[in-house]
Amino acid sequence: MAMRNLRIIMPVKDAAKTAVEALEALKPATADLICEVIVYDDFSTDENSLLLREACSRLGFTFVSLSELTNHPSPNYLLVLQREQEICRKEGNTGLVIVESDVFVTPETLVCLKAEAGARPDSGIVAAVTTDEEGRINYPYLYAKRKKGKNLDTRRHLSFCCSLLTPQLLEKVDFQNLDSSKDWFDVTISHLSLEAGLHNWLLCTLPVVHKPHQSRPWKQLKYKNPLLYYWRKFTHGFDKI
Image (cartoon, rainbow, N blue to C red; front, top):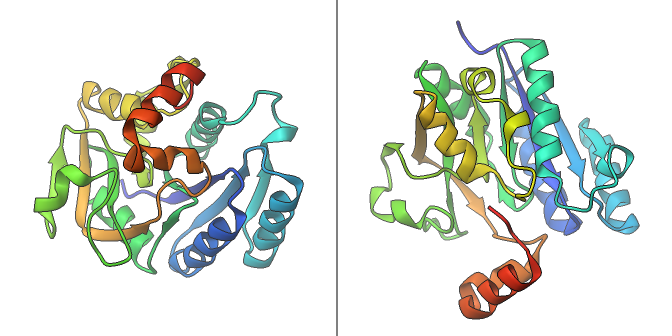
């Protein structure tokens, strides 16, 4: 059965200027799809929240303030995933696309993700490869640098930078069982997809521009000063994967 609908989510924490540019790139990519775009504002500042809310109104997207749903401090990725899984299951045959707020899709990105997932009925996650603005594959897919122009059935984890979680995965993997002590779940869900007998695909034929960690600049230490990054990660309890 062909996938009927898509729900496209963008979780955002501050860095509203970059996020609004990413949303503007997303608008033409939805033109030929039955879909809804939902922006989850994860405790941004009042100024950034206002910019996001205005952009959603202008672009016809749904704005959700997580401060109205929880008192849990950012990041609230788990709540977003659990909420969206429940909605997708109720709608039936609906895929969930995650586009992070520092990723810039092209007009064909979402159509291609949906088509590639539909052509592979045993797929769990289908992801677009990320590149810098010069077209070079970048983090988190450096392991695929030599595979440009190919589509990979991979057992390596897929990031949620620009990924489609298929209805098959959403039915087989229950996000209510995810570890609430973690912050991010792309690694875990990638593994659970494989354990459920599904295949994860990285589309190196479908690049999207990724400007990593615009909303959490401290994470750029991963590239500039990895020792300091890991010290902060472990001593402050940041970035639990």
